[in-house]
Image (cartoon, rainbow, N blue to C red):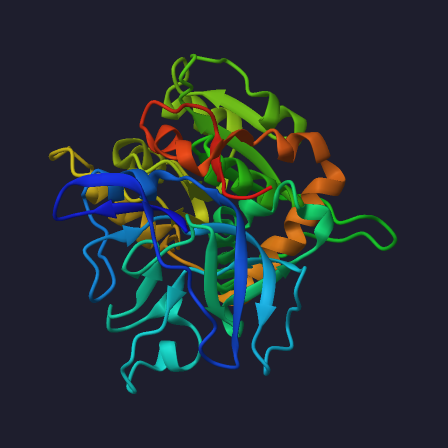
Length: 371
């Protein structure tokens, strides 16, 4: 079967012929891959910054943003049946008995670092025609989300971040007041850094959760507004023409920053505008671009005197995939055409190197493996 693979030792990326997998245990299911989203992680892997093939292979099949259709199930599988749509989680637990997180099914908090990840670290990914997966790592997707289901995995980044945010803010009185008989009013302000797919999906999740949202981003075409941001009832601030001080004035007191751009300079500038009791959430991983000056005294002073929290979040557990599927359905009901507009283009697997290019452009490009 066709697969898109990276050969780290040879510094090559190409479409290959890979053996079609078979079900080997009663808890496994076989999926026909429909679509695989392309993200910055994939581009970094094909730039040979990281990415580790499974044992016994000199190549790694790419892809961790999945949408698939079940074609066969093992005798003990009860969660899905042939014909169901599913997305698959990414990280698999480490083997160490003393890793409490992995033994509890929270490999996103693995203590040892010996986890594996589909399409990233020591496990083949989803950019191929058929995949075998164990039942616990499958999340059923309603058929009505067929056109946008490939966005589930990037949305899980926001879902886990919001889950952690709510846990953290239980440390203080933070709930918005509710008038009897009235809908919940928004009282918290969030800033999203970046208007890529992770940033825009995060902005949607924050809006659904009841935040006033401001998105701060550069644009390849130097836009002064963003139709997607406007359509979801958020505010767009163009970084080309507005400083971080401008952003702080426009957004008002900032309760939450959701960083989704991987640019450390702007992130540390914005940290200094975080409000009292605020939470700054890092989700981006910047490349090493040399040193920069940061006013660490100012940041440390604010973190202490304003009771602030700086949080890093990576990967997501199965229940965050379920939350993402639920919220993606809510997005579709509230902003149907907007959600679909996040997907810029679909490419057949034979042309997968085009969306993997740094010059592909758009918001979210997708490799269409089957229709």
